[in-house]
Picture 1 (cartoon, helix red, strand yellow):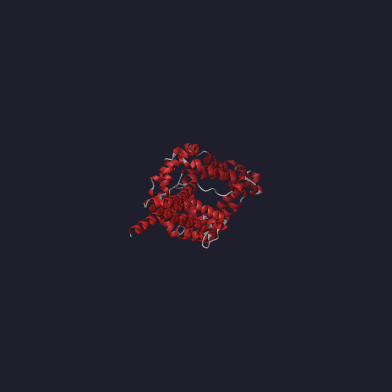
Picture 2 (picture 1 turned 90 degrees about the vertical axis):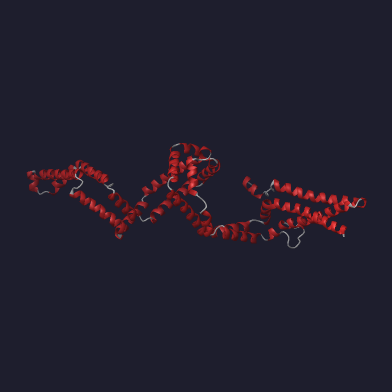
Length: 422
C-alpha cells in the first residue's frame, strides 16, 4: 500500500481546538456533577448549599441535554440507536443535494455573479501586480502558485498537452473568417500609404529577378523565333530589346509613384481589398487556402516547435519568477502594466471581458459544478462526512454544551430562589 493510499484510509484527526473545547465542556460537566454531590452532602449544614445544589443539578441537566443534542447530530449517543439521532450520517445524500442547490441558487446564478463581479477591479489588480509586484517579483505567487504551475507543466503529458494546444489553435483558425480581416488590413495599409514600401520592395525584387534570369528570356525568344530570325541573329536583337524594355519599365515604376503600371497595380490591390471583404467567391478561395495551410505538415511541425518553446519559457518563469521579472520579460510586463494603468478604456474592456467570461462559465458549467458537489458528497461514506462536518463546526458546538451547562445552572438557581422566597 502506498503512502498516498494509506493517507486516504487513515481517519482525519480532529483539530486541536476541537479536542480542547471538548475536554473543557466535558470537564465542566464532571465538575458540576462533583459539585452536586458535594452540595447535597453539605446541604443540611447551611441553607446556602441548597442554592449550590440547585445550580449544579440544573447545570448537569442542561449540560447532559446539550451533550445529547450535539452528539445526536453526528452519531448515536452511547451507541444506542435512539430515533432521530445520527442525523448527519442518515441524511448525507440530502445534505449533498441541499448544498448543491444552495450553491446553484446563491453563487452560480449568472445574474448574481455579474452583480458581484462589478465590484472587482481585475484590471487594477493586474496593473498593481505588474508595476509593483509584492516582495520584489512574485511574493506568495512565487512560493505557491509558481510551484503548482511548474508541477502541472511537468506532470502533464507534453505530447498530449501540446496536441490539445495545437488542436485548439487550429480549431480557432478554422473558425476565424480570415478574408475580411485581410481585406481590412489591406485597405488600412492602402489608406495610410503603408503599402508603398512593400510595392517598392516588389519592384526591386522584380529587377533583380530579371537580371538573374536573362538567359531564360533569351532562350524563350530563341525557341519561339522562326528559323530565319535565328539564322540572321535577329532573335538576339529581339531578346536585347525585350530585356531593355522590361528594365526601363521596372526602373520607371520604381522612380515614379504615379507611373501608369504602378497605379494599375494599386488599383488591383484596392479591388482585392474590396473582394476580400465582400466577395463570397474570394472568401471561399481564401478559406480553402487557409484549410490547406492548416493541414500542411510543415505548419503542424512549426506549431509543435512553438508550443515547446512556450512550454519551456513558462517552466522557466514558474521555477524562477523573480529572475524572469528582472529580465526583458519583466521590463515588458511593467511597461504593459503602465500602459494598462494609463488607458481607462482598456481597463474597462478587461474588466468587462473577465466579468463576461466568469458569467459564461457559470451559465455553461453551473449545472456540472452542482452535480459534482452532489455526487461527491454522495460518494463519501457516512463516517467521512461526519468527521469532516464535525471537525469544521464541532468547536462551536462544544460552546453550546458549555453554554447549556451554565445557563441550565442559572435557571435552576433562579427557580430555587423563587421557591425559597415563596
